[in-house]
Each structure stands twice: as C-alpha cells, then as structure tokens.
Length: 133
Image (cartoon, rainbow, N blue to C red; front, side):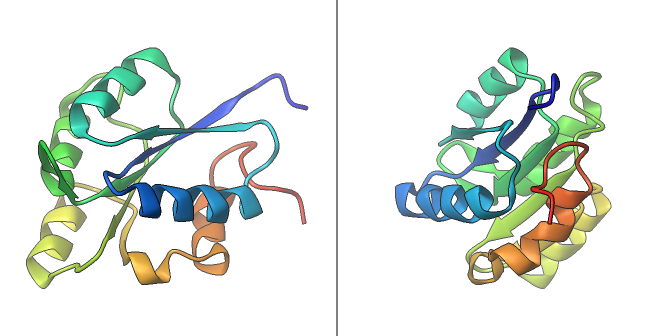
C-alpha cells in the first residue's frame, strides 16, 4: 500500500446511485483509495473540510442546490479550486453542459454512462488512484 491515501468524494442524494458508484469505483480504484459519500452539498462541504479530496463525482440535482452551481463555489475556494470534478446527471441538458464546461469540470456524463470502461480514464489521471492493470 502507498503512504498516500487518495480520496474520491461522491456527492449524490440517491442511495441506489451511491451504491452503483461504489460498485463501479470498487472495480477500478486501488485498494488504498478512500471513497467518501455525501447526500447533499452541506455534507460535501463538511467532507471537503475533513479530508484531502483528490477527485469529486458530482450529481447535478441535490436537495440543497445544483451541482453546476457548486462547481463555481469550488473554483472560488482556495483549498478546493484545483480538485477535478466529474458531473454525473440523470438528464444532462445543453444548458448544463455549457454551465459545467465554463466552470471547468472535467466532463459531464449521464448516469447510464457511469461504467468502469468510461470512468477508468478519469480515475487513471489521479495519482495512486487506479488499480494497476
């Protein structure tokens, strides 16, 4: 195991979707990668204060706000602005694509596309995060 623990924060309010994210990330993440979950933006802010987060997977529709707006908040925060963000939404719209792209998210995907082969390239770009092939 590496001395470095990489943390991925998944911000998703649906328990079923959180379980799907956990399973897919379990297939592609190294054993020393910690995956943390938040069901809303308030909990996400708390997790970001508590953990060194290397990557964020973010739903767009959350009980206390929009993920696309949260990306702008991340960009303005000194400690969080460099964390890469992948937005995953049930129904990504053209407006959401533009907003997310302008806020510097890595990509926006539909939840149907959240499968190991699609997600692996994003995880491989996080130092120490991906399982070695």
